[in-house]
Image 1 (tube, rainbow, N blue to C red):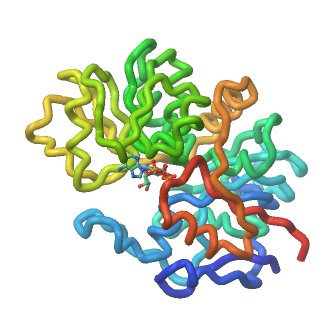
Image 2 (image 1 turned 180 degrees about the vertical axis):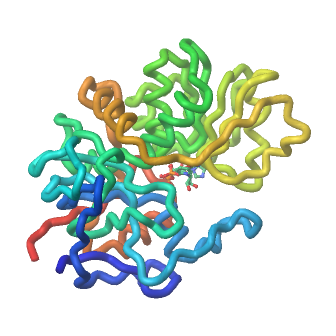
Length: 318
Ligand SMILES: NC(=O)c1ccc[n+]([C@@H]2O[C@H](COP(=O)([O-])OP(=O)(O)OC[C@H]3O[C@@H](n4cnc5c(N)ncnc54)[C@H](OP(=O)(O)O)[C@@H]3O)[C@@H](O)[C@H]2O)c1
């Protein structure tokens, strides 16, 4: 048996129940990871509420109940399923596990989680498990949007909306690895944080959205009903990358839209680990909570204005 957090009915943070559940067994191609830390990501609470926040036309089937939320882990390999040659017991690994998958395949809010070997990479040596766990979904989203979807060229001007959040703060830093001039849009309290990450121009959206008009690429992690206000920041023919749903008034916008869904990728996790160990990417931590208090972490997530990532710490004391 092991301790885990499960959702038995859709609802607010209070439905996150800390309890004893069977310890999972790795299948072929999988390892069992003793989880030291697991990140909180927006899809965790979208699932917790049964996806009622997603526009109806795009709403996925709600997950089967009960389920263990979470997709991002950092921990130690403690067992291997058949056919696993990449990982040995004792290896320290991190990754975005089985994402996307219709029924929350990762089950990260737990003392132990199974993971396909190919979804993991060696944990960066220069950070602890809390910082490593903060990377997978947010880091891979930024990586896949900037490098897979558009193959960001050198020396472009990139605007990141929601720059201080999980995806945003990685997008800022990954754009800088291509020598981009980066405009960070966030509320005023994040100004110093974002300058420290390399942002060249800071826009406090709470003081009016005074945007430049010569941007090559916009990464919008916010979306929403006023998303179209970002369009004038782009040069004609620029690229707008919505990370979430938004009203961009696309028919009027003289720009290219490119989007996508983040997916597990151990090879890209290894590249993120390399950038972290090289000091080119740092990991912002908004707050940490014990696994048993996952409901407090979700309460924090719903308050918004996140700076970096929220992470659950798994103590293995019980
Ligand atoms: N397409 C995909 O595959 C994919 C993958 C990952 C995430 N997502 C989605 O991307 C979104 C962001 O995820 P995340 O993990 O980065 O969330 P997050 O950590 O909560 O960050 C959101 C950030 O946006 C800022 N913000 C809020 N309103 C703003 C506004 N009007 N203008 C500018 N900034 C604003 C917030 O702080 P301040 O307001 O204080 O600045 C916060 O720092 C979520 O909706 C998530 O579901 C999609």
